[in-house]
Image (cartoon, rainbow, N blue to C red):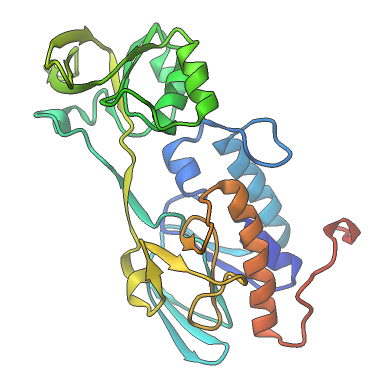
Length: 311
């Protein structure tokens, strides 16, 4: 979305193709109500608020947005001439910027007998509405940032929050872990879920200590699983672009091995790469400005300062 806005800043026409029903990628699909703290200029902002602001910013230049449309192939026909085919149409472009996040993603599921039948009831892999957990007994399992963050966010809303992790230590940011240990969240480690009990919904969970194998049963209203996600580049891997560790290799211009195809954000890799939203916001203008020069070699790489514009 920010790349589309920046294309408008460089007076480039844009078609933005998104496979999801809405823009925002993981922000809207996975944690719209979760706070983000490392976006410059925002002490804190929810993922949905950030996406809404990006949408308003992008709409200043009215890009051609195509939702629920999947790119199936990308072919370079000639210098500055690419053919992009989707499951609905085809497009011609002078340059391409890929900002596909982690690609197609699916949650790592809880491998406990009978878990699947509760997925439409009270076993959750995504949290889209915090209020549904108000006054509830919530058990969260996982050891990364998402698990710790959801536990902290639900603590003042739920009746009780239990966080279960199979290891002794959490992988989340140090500050978040410190807040967790100073909170009222009931932390149970090193323990994992080994049983789910209930008819239409989960009523009790069996927890097993990883080392001693001792078990206990905990009454719950909801279970949230945060084991991360399995991602796939899908058709991107078939376009002749250099791939490393499921990411697109780019140079300092955010350009791939194919001239005219650029990439930015979590989908990219280079020495020292950090997969952060804040980093992606810097990579997008780099990709756009270099794409502009690729399209028009006479164009300036630096666009000047946006404060001089009247939008």
